[in-house]
Image 1 (cartoon, each protein chain N blue to C red):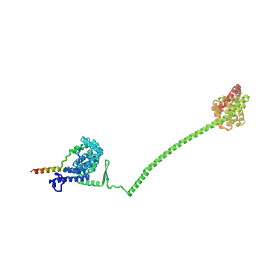
Image 2: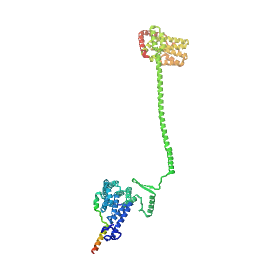
Image 3: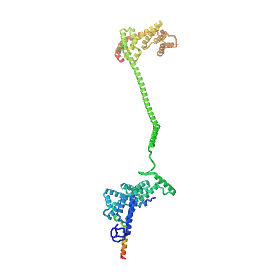
Length: 50
Length: 525
């Protein structure tokens, strides 16, 4: 049995064309590679200090 | 692949040959990104767009600079109707690689058709409005808006999914399935669409997987067999399931079927239609015959009526012709008028001679004409003349008749007495004894019918007279009575004298009447 109210929560307002710029600016662009590079750099920095 | 530290090209070594940095983990991350990109690409190729989006997002989580993955994600977004999402990915992609980037082409393609972009944007706005209606529980308005959206942008899958959800809520499962089928045509792995489809099938009783295990398996196998042996397609709002092995009859069987159909058609015509036609034709013919018969009867009666009219007219014409013939002679003269005038003239020339005018009158003028057709002046002249010459002539003829009876000449007696009665009858007081003598003469002459008629005439005309009792006795079978007994000799001279005196006094009046008669004659004709 489908619960209409629950299903309705899965739908979100779609972004309009005017909102594209804001959407791009708010995009979360973090990735694993960035995290790994940061970790590797921190590790290297610590080894250089030690 | 380039070193994250010095941006030099990396080799197969786990370290950078340029700066010596450890790149083993970095390489694994990049490889994971590539793997997810490949997975996303494969899913996109089989139109599992939902799966492709998941894989490509995963790829970008590992390496945000994976331009190919980002461009493909933009394409998939565009395909499912999320134009803003697509543009976002392509713009970011272009930011990571400014040159030689397919995103340039994609962005240009979208921006080169502003009308289309505006239409898509209007569709997005309507979708958002419909979603707003849904939250306000205005489902009917939401359905109306969503119908407009999918009409403008058929690939807007979110709009179709929301519309199908509304249909499911409204228990319009067939319509929901139709929308879901269109979603699945674009995105075969759309989890939400598959979930809704399953629910719709359950509600329509098509899929019974959730029933008992044993019966479920059996039903499922039946369902599969049924599905395998049938072809299902949608026509408008209806789902039509047609057996797969249904084949149109061909060749001889088709011909046979056509033949059977023709025979049935002819039989139906013969047994059902033809009798009705015949009955109709018969009734029409009977009605026409009835109408003709009625018309014929009317005409026959009309002909009979006309024939009767013709006959009546013919009789009237004959009577008129006879009357005209009576009035006119062969040379057109009026015989009766002339006779009366001639008699008057003879009397005026010689008043003593009664025989000549009496003979003229008797020969040419009958009483019926005088009493019915003659003019008043003619009638007056006739009776005046008869009063002058009639009594003496009647007496003379009466005597002659009696003499003839004595001499047993009954034929002459009848002639004389008929003539005597003609003159006596025109008098004011006719002599019944003359009529009685005429009856006797008839009887003696063997004319018994006329004798009986004459006696009856006496009885009815002179009921109180002695002649009437004698006539009655004669009718009773007694012997004929002699005429001498009826009239006394003394009365006759006295009567004759009175009449002669009156005749002399009326000579002048008669001359005037004769002149008047001459003038009136044409009118009598």
